Length: 284
Ligand code: SAM
Ligand code: GLN
Image (cartoon, rainbow, N blue to C red; front, side, top):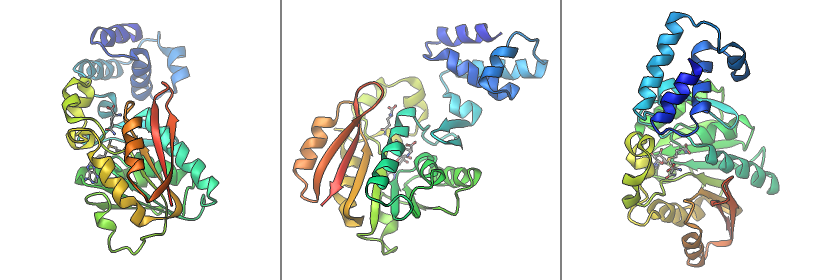
Protein backbone atom coordinates (compact mmCIF):
# COMPACT_ATOMS: atom_id res chain seq x y z
CA UNK A 1 0.00 0.00 0.00
CA UNK A 2 2.92 2.35 0.75
CA UNK A 3 4.26 2.14 -2.81
CA UNK A 4 0.77 2.67 -4.27
CA UNK A 5 0.36 5.83 -2.24
CA UNK A 6 3.73 7.14 -3.45
CA UNK A 7 2.74 6.49 -7.09
CA UNK A 8 -0.63 8.16 -6.58
CA UNK A 9 1.06 11.33 -5.32
CA UNK A 10 3.69 11.19 -8.07
CA UNK A 11 0.93 11.02 -10.67
CA UNK A 12 -0.66 14.10 -9.14
CA UNK A 13 2.65 15.91 -9.70
CA UNK A 14 3.56 16.17 -6.02
CA UNK A 15 7.30 16.44 -5.32
CA UNK A 16 8.79 14.63 -2.28
CA UNK A 17 5.96 12.10 -2.42
CA UNK A 18 7.89 9.43 -0.50
CA UNK A 19 8.52 11.83 2.37
CA UNK A 20 4.84 12.79 2.44
CA UNK A 21 3.65 9.19 2.47
CA UNK A 22 6.07 8.48 5.34
CA UNK A 23 4.42 11.31 7.28
CA UNK A 24 0.91 10.01 6.52
CA UNK A 25 1.77 6.46 7.63
CA UNK A 26 3.57 7.72 10.68
CA UNK A 27 0.60 9.87 11.68
CA UNK A 28 -2.13 7.28 11.07
CA UNK A 29 -0.25 4.26 12.44
CA UNK A 30 1.29 6.30 15.28
CA UNK A 31 4.77 5.06 14.46
CA UNK A 32 8.09 6.82 14.11
CA UNK A 33 9.26 6.94 10.48
CA UNK A 34 11.93 4.18 10.83
CA UNK A 35 9.23 1.93 12.31
CA UNK A 36 6.97 2.70 9.35
CA UNK A 37 9.54 0.92 7.16
CA UNK A 38 9.72 -2.06 9.51
CA UNK A 39 5.96 -2.51 9.39
CA UNK A 40 4.84 -1.22 6.04
CA UNK A 41 4.25 -4.65 4.57
CA UNK A 42 2.14 -5.78 7.52
CA UNK A 43 -1.59 -6.05 6.91
CA UNK A 44 -3.21 -2.81 8.05
CA UNK A 45 -6.33 -2.52 10.15
CA UNK A 46 -9.20 -1.59 7.87
CA UNK A 47 -9.77 1.65 9.74
CA UNK A 48 -6.14 2.71 9.25
CA UNK A 49 -6.07 1.81 5.60
CA UNK A 50 -9.28 3.76 4.99
CA UNK A 51 -7.87 6.76 6.77
CA UNK A 52 -4.67 6.59 4.71
CA UNK A 53 -6.65 6.25 1.47
CA UNK A 54 -8.78 9.24 2.47
CA UNK A 55 -5.78 11.46 3.17
CA UNK A 56 -4.06 10.47 -0.08
CA UNK A 57 -7.24 11.23 -2.06
CA UNK A 58 -7.39 14.71 -0.51
CA UNK A 59 -3.67 15.27 -1.04
CA UNK A 60 -4.07 14.42 -4.74
CA UNK A 61 -6.33 17.48 -4.92
CA UNK A 62 -3.22 19.43 -3.81
CA UNK A 63 -4.53 20.29 -0.37
CA UNK A 64 -1.36 20.83 1.70
CA UNK A 65 -0.44 17.89 3.90
CA UNK A 66 -0.10 20.19 6.91
CA UNK A 67 -3.86 20.89 6.69
CA UNK A 68 -4.76 17.22 6.20
CA UNK A 69 -2.74 16.12 9.22
CA UNK A 70 -3.48 19.44 11.01
CA UNK A 71 0.16 19.62 12.03
CA UNK A 72 3.70 20.22 10.91
CA UNK A 73 7.17 19.86 12.41
CA UNK A 74 9.15 23.09 12.51
CA UNK A 75 12.68 23.41 13.94
CA UNK A 76 12.22 22.15 17.52
CA UNK A 77 8.42 22.28 17.79
CA UNK A 78 5.34 20.45 16.55
CA UNK A 79 2.68 22.91 15.44
CA UNK A 80 -1.01 22.56 14.88
CA UNK A 81 -1.94 24.20 11.58
CA UNK A 82 -5.49 25.44 11.07
CA UNK A 83 -6.91 26.04 7.63
CA UNK A 84 -6.66 29.70 6.74
CA UNK A 85 -3.22 30.02 8.36
CA UNK A 86 0.08 30.04 6.44
CA UNK A 87 1.93 26.70 6.52
CA UNK A 88 5.48 27.19 7.88
CA UNK A 89 8.26 26.29 5.44
CA UNK A 90 11.54 24.54 6.13
CA UNK A 91 13.60 27.50 4.84
CA UNK A 92 12.11 29.65 7.61
CA UNK A 93 13.99 27.53 10.17
CA UNK A 94 17.05 29.50 9.03
CA UNK A 95 15.44 32.63 10.40
CA UNK A 96 15.24 30.98 13.83
CA UNK A 97 18.86 29.76 13.65
CA UNK A 98 20.16 33.20 12.70
CA UNK A 99 18.11 34.93 15.37
CA UNK A 100 19.61 32.64 18.02
CA UNK A 101 23.15 33.16 16.79
CA UNK A 102 22.79 36.95 16.67
CA UNK A 103 21.32 37.01 20.19
CA UNK A 104 24.44 35.12 21.31
CA UNK A 105 26.72 37.56 19.46
CA UNK A 106 25.14 40.57 21.15
CA UNK A 107 25.00 38.80 24.54
CA UNK A 108 21.22 38.98 24.70
CA UNK A 109 20.41 35.27 24.49
CA UNK A 110 18.66 35.05 27.83
CA UNK A 111 17.86 38.73 28.19
CA UNK A 112 16.39 41.21 25.74
CA UNK A 113 13.20 41.42 23.80
CA UNK A 114 12.30 39.95 20.43
CA UNK A 115 9.49 41.18 18.21
CA UNK A 116 8.11 38.82 15.59
CA UNK A 117 5.91 40.41 12.94
CA UNK A 118 3.40 38.35 10.96
CA UNK A 119 3.62 35.32 13.23
CA UNK A 120 1.06 33.16 11.36
CA UNK A 121 0.93 29.80 13.18
CA UNK A 122 3.42 31.17 15.71
CA UNK A 123 6.17 28.96 14.27
CA UNK A 124 9.09 31.36 14.70
CA UNK A 125 8.01 32.72 18.09
CA UNK A 126 7.37 29.22 19.51
CA UNK A 127 10.66 27.83 18.18
CA UNK A 128 12.59 30.77 19.66
CA UNK A 129 10.81 30.48 23.00
CA UNK A 130 11.44 26.74 23.17
CA UNK A 131 15.15 27.37 22.56
CA UNK A 132 15.16 29.74 25.52
CA UNK A 133 15.75 32.81 23.39
CA UNK A 134 15.25 36.23 24.97
CA UNK A 135 13.43 37.24 28.10
CA UNK A 136 10.33 38.33 26.28
CA UNK A 137 8.90 37.56 22.86
CA UNK A 138 6.14 39.73 21.43
CA UNK A 139 4.41 38.65 18.22
CA UNK A 140 1.82 40.32 16.01
CA UNK A 141 -0.35 39.36 13.04
CA UNK A 142 -3.14 41.14 11.21
CA UNK A 143 -5.14 37.91 10.94
CA UNK A 144 -7.35 36.87 13.86
CA UNK A 145 -7.18 33.24 12.69
CA UNK A 146 -3.40 33.41 12.85
CA UNK A 147 -3.40 34.84 16.38
CA UNK A 148 -5.82 32.12 17.54
CA UNK A 149 -3.68 29.39 15.98
CA UNK A 150 -0.42 30.87 17.31
CA UNK A 151 -1.86 31.07 20.83
CA UNK A 152 -2.85 27.37 20.61
CA UNK A 153 0.66 26.48 19.46
CA UNK A 154 2.32 28.36 22.29
CA UNK A 155 0.14 26.39 24.74
CA UNK A 156 0.80 23.06 23.00
CA UNK A 157 4.52 23.67 23.31
CA UNK A 158 4.38 24.97 26.88
CA UNK A 159 5.77 28.40 25.99
CA UNK A 160 2.62 30.48 26.48
CA UNK A 161 4.20 32.33 29.41
CA UNK A 162 7.07 33.51 27.22
CA UNK A 163 5.15 35.00 24.28
CA UNK A 164 2.54 37.76 24.07
CA UNK A 165 0.43 37.84 20.91
CA UNK A 166 -1.32 40.92 19.53
CA UNK A 167 -3.58 41.28 16.53
CA UNK A 168 -2.92 44.24 14.25
CA UNK A 169 -0.90 45.87 11.51
CA UNK A 170 2.85 45.19 12.03
CA UNK A 171 4.00 47.42 14.96
CA UNK A 172 0.63 49.12 15.47
CA UNK A 173 -0.54 47.07 18.51
CA UNK A 174 2.80 47.71 20.27
CA UNK A 175 2.43 51.47 20.45
CA UNK A 176 1.32 51.53 24.09
CA UNK A 177 3.81 49.01 25.46
CA UNK A 178 6.56 51.56 25.97
CA UNK A 179 9.25 49.35 24.44
CA UNK A 180 10.62 51.81 21.87
CA UNK A 181 14.39 51.53 21.68
CA UNK A 182 14.47 48.37 23.85
CA UNK A 183 14.22 45.54 21.37
CA UNK A 184 17.23 43.31 20.54
CA UNK A 185 15.77 41.71 17.42
CA UNK A 186 12.85 42.32 15.10
CA UNK A 187 12.32 39.17 13.06
CA UNK A 188 9.82 38.56 10.27
CA UNK A 189 8.93 36.30 7.39
CA UNK A 190 6.69 38.88 5.73
CA UNK A 191 4.64 38.45 2.57
CA UNK A 192 7.19 39.06 -0.21
CA UNK A 193 5.77 37.57 -3.40
CA UNK A 194 5.14 40.00 -6.30
CA UNK A 195 1.38 40.15 -6.75
CA UNK A 196 1.56 39.13 -10.41
CA UNK A 197 3.62 36.05 -9.53
CA UNK A 198 1.00 34.56 -7.21
CA UNK A 199 -1.08 32.86 -9.95
CA UNK A 200 2.06 30.98 -11.09
CA UNK A 201 2.76 29.41 -7.67
CA UNK A 202 1.98 25.76 -6.87
CA UNK A 203 -1.69 24.94 -6.13
CA UNK A 204 -0.86 24.24 -2.45
CA UNK A 205 0.41 27.81 -2.09
CA UNK A 206 -1.85 29.88 -4.35
CA UNK A 207 -5.08 28.06 -3.50
CA UNK A 208 -4.58 27.37 0.22
CA UNK A 209 -2.14 29.78 1.86
CA UNK A 210 -4.01 32.96 2.73
CA UNK A 211 -3.38 35.67 0.09
CA UNK A 212 -2.55 38.16 2.80
CA UNK A 213 0.36 35.94 3.85
CA UNK A 214 1.90 35.96 0.36
CA UNK A 215 1.06 39.26 -1.31
CA UNK A 216 3.98 41.66 -1.15
CA UNK A 217 2.26 44.20 -3.43
CA UNK A 218 3.15 45.02 -7.05
CA UNK A 219 6.93 44.76 -6.53
CA UNK A 220 6.92 42.26 -3.63
CA UNK A 221 8.56 44.77 -1.30
CA UNK A 222 5.59 46.60 0.19
CA UNK A 223 5.64 44.86 3.59
CA UNK A 224 9.45 44.80 3.73
CA UNK A 225 9.52 48.60 3.22
CA UNK A 226 6.93 49.15 5.96
CA UNK A 227 8.78 46.94 8.43
CA UNK A 228 12.20 48.41 7.56
CA UNK A 229 11.01 51.93 8.07
CA UNK A 230 9.42 51.35 11.49
CA UNK A 231 11.78 48.77 13.06
CA UNK A 232 14.41 51.40 14.03
CA UNK A 233 11.87 52.99 16.39
CA UNK A 234 11.77 49.77 18.45
CA UNK A 235 15.32 48.44 18.01
CA UNK A 236 18.03 49.38 20.42
CA UNK A 237 21.38 50.51 19.07
CA UNK A 238 23.25 47.46 17.73
CA UNK A 239 20.02 45.45 17.52
CA UNK A 240 19.05 43.72 14.27
CA UNK A 241 16.15 43.42 11.87
CA UNK A 242 16.15 39.91 10.39
CA UNK A 243 13.94 39.23 7.38
CA UNK A 244 13.21 36.28 5.16
CA UNK A 245 13.24 37.52 1.55
CA UNK A 246 12.50 36.19 -1.93
CA UNK A 247 15.25 34.26 -3.72
CA UNK A 248 15.80 37.13 -6.20
CA UNK A 249 15.37 40.16 -3.92
CA UNK A 250 18.95 40.70 -2.65
CA UNK A 251 19.73 43.59 -5.00
CA UNK A 252 16.50 45.41 -4.12
CA UNK A 253 17.20 44.97 -0.41
CA UNK A 254 20.66 46.47 -0.93
CA UNK A 255 19.02 49.50 -2.56
CA UNK A 256 16.60 49.90 0.35
CA UNK A 257 19.56 49.71 2.76
CA UNK A 258 21.44 52.45 0.85
CA UNK A 259 18.43 54.74 1.26
CA UNK A 260 17.98 54.17 5.02
CA UNK A 261 20.30 55.94 7.44
CA UNK A 262 19.09 54.01 10.49
CA UNK A 263 21.02 50.87 9.57
CA UNK A 264 24.79 50.70 9.24
CA UNK A 265 25.29 47.12 8.09
CA UNK A 266 23.53 44.59 5.86
CA UNK A 267 24.26 40.89 5.53
CA UNK A 268 22.71 38.03 3.62
CA UNK A 269 22.53 34.33 4.48
CA UNK A 270 21.95 31.71 1.80
CA UNK A 271 19.40 28.93 2.07
CA UNK A 272 20.16 25.27 1.29
CA UNK A 273 19.50 25.93 -2.40
CA UNK A 274 22.13 28.66 -2.49
CA UNK A 275 19.70 31.62 -2.66
CA UNK A 276 20.16 34.73 -0.52
CA UNK A 277 17.18 34.09 1.75
CA UNK A 278 17.84 35.93 4.99
CA UNK A 279 18.65 39.62 5.18
CA UNK A 280 20.08 41.08 8.38
CA UNK A 281 20.15 44.85 9.01
CA UNK A 282 22.02 46.27 11.95
CA UNK A 283 20.55 49.30 13.76
CA UNK A 284 22.98 52.21 14.05
N1 SAM B 1 5.73 33.73 10.54
C1 SAM B 1 4.92 32.69 9.91
C2 SAM B 1 5.82 31.67 9.25
O1 SAM B 1 6.96 31.99 8.94
O2 SAM B 1 5.37 30.53 9.05
C3 SAM B 1 3.94 33.28 8.87
C4 SAM B 1 4.58 34.01 7.73
S1 SAM B 1 3.47 34.46 6.43
C5 SAM B 1 4.57 34.47 5.05
C6 SAM B 1 3.18 36.20 6.67
C7 SAM B 1 2.25 36.54 7.82
O3 SAM B 1 2.13 37.99 7.87
C8 SAM B 1 0.84 36.01 7.69
O4 SAM B 1 0.50 35.29 8.84
C9 SAM B 1 -0.05 37.25 7.53
O5 SAM B 1 -1.32 37.15 8.14
C10 SAM B 1 0.80 38.31 8.21
N2 SAM B 1 0.52 39.68 7.75
C11 SAM B 1 0.25 40.11 6.51
N3 SAM B 1 0.07 41.44 6.50
C12 SAM B 1 0.24 41.87 7.78
C13 SAM B 1 0.19 43.15 8.42
N4 SAM B 1 -0.09 44.25 7.72
N5 SAM B 1 0.44 43.21 9.74
C14 SAM B 1 0.71 42.09 10.45
N6 SAM B 1 0.77 40.86 9.91
C15 SAM B 1 0.54 40.76 8.59
N1 GLN C 1 8.22 30.99 0.83
C1 GLN C 1 6.83 31.22 0.48
C2 GLN C 1 6.50 30.46 -0.78
O1 GLN C 1 6.58 29.29 -0.77
C3 GLN C 1 6.53 32.67 0.40
C4 GLN C 1 6.34 33.19 1.75
C5 GLN C 1 6.33 34.66 1.88
O2 GLN C 1 5.85 35.45 1.07
N2 GLN C 1 6.90 35.03 2.95
O3 GLN C 1 6.12 30.98 -1.79
